[in-house]
Amino acid sequence: MVGEYLRHIGEIPLLTAEEEVELARSIEVGLIARERLQTGFDPADERYLRQLMHEGKRAHDRFIRANLRLVVSVAKRYSGLGLPLIDLIQDGNLGLDRAVKKYDYTKGFKFSTYATWWIRQSITRALGESGRMIRVPARVAESVGTIRRHHRELEGSLGRRPTPQEVALASGHPVEKVRQYLELDQQPISLELPLGEGDGALLGDLLEDDQVADVIDIVSGRLRHAALHSCLSELPQRDADVLRRRFGLDGTEPRTLEELSEAFGVSRERVRQIEQRALRALRARKFKNLLDD
Image 1 (cartoon, rainbow, N blue to C red):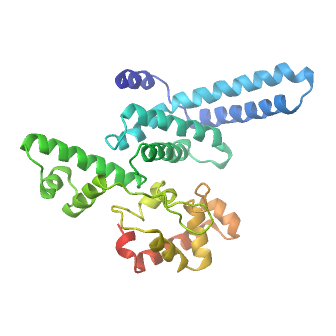
Image 2 (image 1 turned 90 degrees about the vertical axis):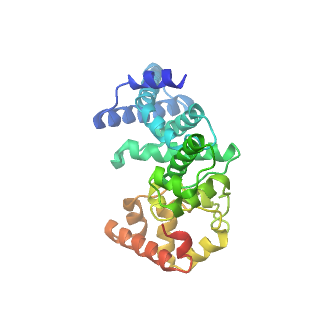
């Protein structure tokens, strides 16, 4: 069934950047037309509004179909971590749908980059709800999957449980990483821990973006709420605020440098400098062994 689905979506043409903008505009106009139809309109405009609404729906459907391959590419990274690939794809499609609805073409973002965040969020949430609390950075989840596959293959060929050294040689990962990732694979991590008091942000929210994965690589259950909260509380207020907003720790989507530039009244370069300074400070704190890669 999966093979047939992959062959089908492989025949769907991808969108150019210009087509993405055109479809996004049509979707936006369609939503406005639908709102007009629901809240009051001139009867003489009804036919035109319904036409715009239907065109927006068609644009939405085309946008979705053209990006189904993106969902598959993300879903494959989580294969073997608790759910069948077809289920991961279905959950990823839900994230894609949300990305299409929330995409703001006026900001000039590449849609695939924006959509990947939502697709990954939907998949990792589904994995967590399936019983395995797996909200870890995408890079770590991919490595766990690779090591797990090599471990299984070696076990079959050797007729015994392979050593970490043997798995490391086969997978190309350092022995210590293999030990840590195998421990992670056996010990699900609960990341439904609040990051702060009353802001509603969860530790899992911190781990849903590749930018964060490059800095905070969680490979065991030893990172506790108190440690992370203590790290952030030791930073200057503005530095902590930048990190919270940049990585979505305030309960919203991660903000762009441009958005933070406007919010703090400084240049984008200055925001980037503050972000890098804050991350360096986190690495240098007493929790370095938990936060550094």
